[in-house]
Image (cartoon, rainbow, N blue to C red; front, top):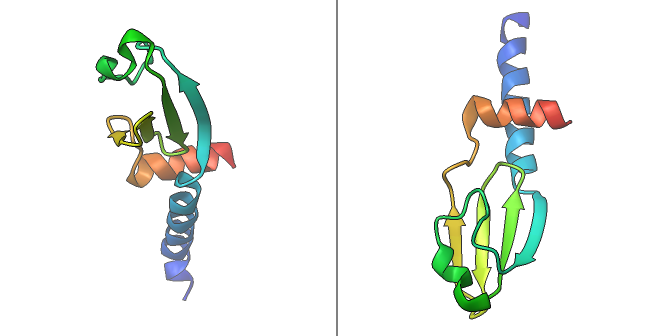
Length: 90
């Protein structure tokens, strides 16, 4: 039965990392158009304000003042990269 120990441990880490990924890493209310991930500078033109919520997996969710939301998914960690980030932070 010990032949499956490594697989079971990998699955356990994967489940924990997926739960950890949903946690909020940072919350930033701003009117800047120079954020490293920002591909939507029009959201903050003329002093308009937004709220950016960054999750542990790198996903950034932007909420505009009118309630619309947009996702920046370019840097979202998945698979082994997510597990690696989780184990480094826990």
